[in-house]
Amino acid sequence: MREMIQAGPMLIENGKPIGGLETQKVSARTVILWDGGTRWWIGCSSGCTLAELAKTLVTAAPGGWPIKQALNFDGGRSSDLWISESIPGGPISRRPLWNKPVRNFLVLVTK
Image 1 (cartoon, rainbow, N blue to C red):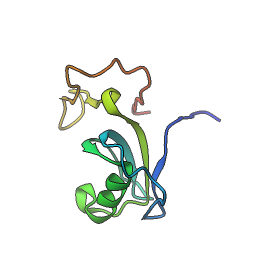
Image 2: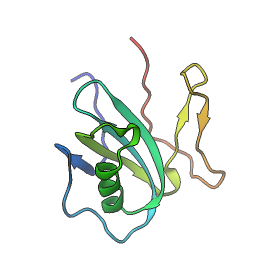
Image 3: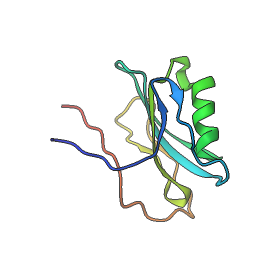
Image 4: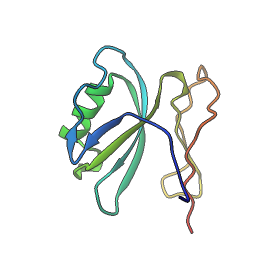
């Protein structure tokens, strides 16, 4: 194994929302999506439950392409998104001042 990530829960599997997701706790969310092919999407949401996020992503996917898999990264005050200025569309920083320091992160680099 070369790469590994610990996160969860899965929000969407094979294009369908996962059953039994949290329906009460509203919090900021960070999520990664995959279309089953070559497209990936990483984003942050404002306050919502895990069940609301999964349902919204299936019915109104960002970019308009169908989502095959979606994985929740983290929620609450540690949700953060930063995109380098060297990436088209960057720089982007979605870190509110009240956020806790983020100790776990995903870094994507070109080979």
